[in-house]
Amino acid sequence: DGGITQSPKYLFRKEGQNVTLSCEQNLNHDAMYWYRQDPGQGLRLIYYSQIVNDFQKGDIAEGYSVSREKKESFPLTVTSAQKNPTAFYLCASSPWTSGALETQYFGPGTRLLVL
Amino acid sequence: DAKTTQPNSMESNEEEPVHLPCNHSTISGTDYIHWYRQLPSQGPEYVIHGLTSNVNNRMASLAIAEDRKSSTLILHRATLRDAAVYYCTSQRGGDNAGGTSYGKLTFGQGTILTVHP
Image (tube, each protein chain N blue to C red):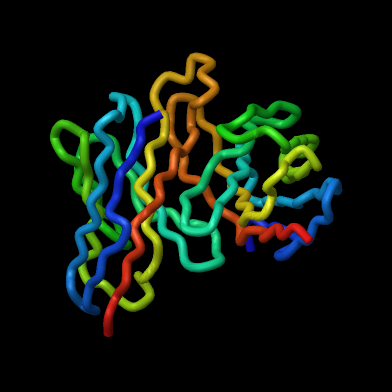
């Protein structure tokens, strides 16, 4: 089955610790995205990548880092600089066609909690 | 990026039509209007999108105002499985020309739809 997988489903972080959230897709999509969702709120864009080895900051990139070494994978690292990391993190992907819009397909999410 | 405004919540009865409104008064001429819905603890699911004309698909219809400052998502016969948070979003489209916000979705707070049996 084609789709997006995120792991783990739940993740616990200690103070001062960096943690990495995994996102993998087998849809052959060029573009991938990371969103953060706080309780009762909409999604906010953290980072996105249009192509391998390239990515751009979204609206709330501070305290986060990403890499895009493979088309299928777009891991997100929540660094110790992110002071309020408790949230639901969603990864998405879409085709990337110049001059056209594309639907985004979302993974099931990772819930990050700070101990 | 265009800001979207939706009512916090709406209720409907099963088998009845539901009209979910969205205001996007700052939308630009090349921004598409997308609707996604999200069940608790799941990722959002695409529902429908449009630019200027009304759109229909198997899930819903999208009615876009002539001035494009508002739109309405129409669920023709609500079912219990339609209970979710519905997000009206805008997505920058048109000529990429190196624009870094191209394709970016901007989400509002969404409308919580409750469907009563």
